[in-house]
Length: 379
Image 1: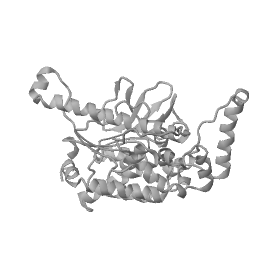
Image 2: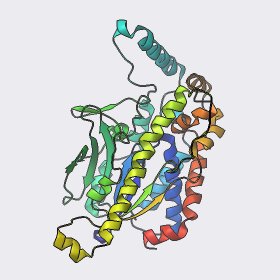
Image 3: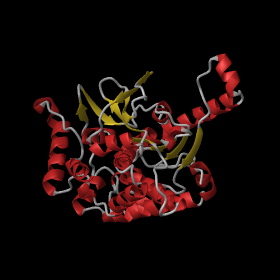
Image 4: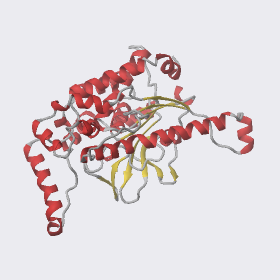
């Protein structure tokens, strides 16, 4: 299997509807490799949250990378919120009643709502388009070395990377980080993408899990544990945000929620990349013989990061009117339809105007770094 030397890993981070940006990056990679190129350029696939869904889709179709990217592009370009979560009056009014009752009469009903939105349509979509049995066959055939999706345990507080891989890959345990060999399925994808408060937690075995970006201290760690020698990281938000600006308005609930989500999805990745750069600098100063003599098991990891060149919340603000009217009313109540609430909106805006804009941005950002990407892919 030609993947044994310098295995390349693709790490896809979280971000709800923002993950459409990753599809644009993949489309550009497909073009750079040539439309007729065969083989899978990323034998190791790691994903978290919506990035976990994209990674799993690539794993399912690992025998044909080009076809996998075409399928993902078709789905993301034609997304509507109704394919991810319910927006019908019964569902949204029911949500309002449950949360209102919990806030005013919780002492009496003693029952709290599980989430703001019902993502049962997403389960139906994943069950329809993904044949998870293909992952094991891809591994057996040599098209795929390993795939993982990460979820956060609400009871243990641990970050679990559920993975399928070749037999020689061993499970791991580090501080608050665990790698568990398991056959992946829909529940793992719903768990890794269960945005806190927004989508319901998912029970896997004995514990409930939520979005994998929560308490993910080292987003790049699963790829290294799975044997990656070089890693392409595709983010779903700008790693460097603007500085402080003066404001006299108290932050809305949507602004606070958007800030919390951005902290979950972006801060851990930025810190992990800094840590990896320091380790690379230290390890790179020693020859392989010196590292072996000193008993240092670490190895340099080549890393390339692609993240949006524009603020995705600003783009989301231009497309807020594409949401169903009743959903806009619900989101307006928490301030998500205001300019300062666009960050929260960007995670929920599964509408073609927004997702297509992000795909085009990811495509353009990748081609703008054609030389770096080509070098990484060994083209």
